Image 1: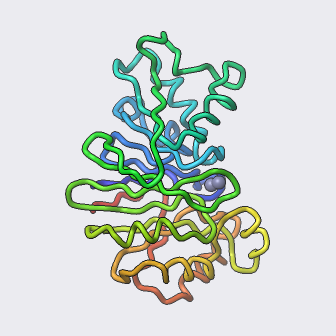
Image 2: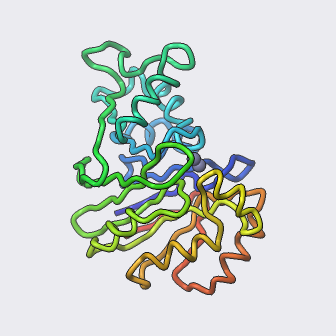
Length: 254
Ligand SMILES: [Zn+2]
Ligand SMILES: [Zn+2]
């Protein structure tokens, strides 16, 4: 499994892109940053888009991607998430006011986007992969994903505060090879962190205790770049050799 980090920041500033990971060139995990980093041919290869939740930093490039690809691809692109998230995308964004309804363009019979509801805790086949949405603990309805191919499983929390289900399910994945977890704020901002449903480095350490295996690489995303130095030094102080802080543009092979 190949994962390219298109963006892994918890806010948008020069050099810091909103969250999006590209798996095996054709599957997106969140769509915060796509059209500013992939060229049009690369964008046209995308067949599946897994969305964790409705916050703009995870969906905003879905709209520009649709706009770029209309008339360029023949098969509909699947946008997958739990029903509440898909309903929200259609109601609040693809509502013909904020943005066109690309599930009805260029026509209803052969639209650009196809919304595919998937159920929590149930693996769903997409391309050569299997994706399982798992409810996490954010300020809005949100899921993380366990993504597996024949050889490898990875877990991606998306945005979350303290949570349990995703670790319970991850602990059952024999071929778990990577954990992608958010750490948004420094520990001094615990109050704001818990109100907004995120984690600090202190919270990260508590979450990682729920992971049975301690030999799995842990990739940190969604750091607020305004607090980057503080968060990085707090994460380093955890002295966990398996932790790696992600950067935009990085490519990981599992
Ligand atoms: Zn969020
Ligand atoms: Zn976010």
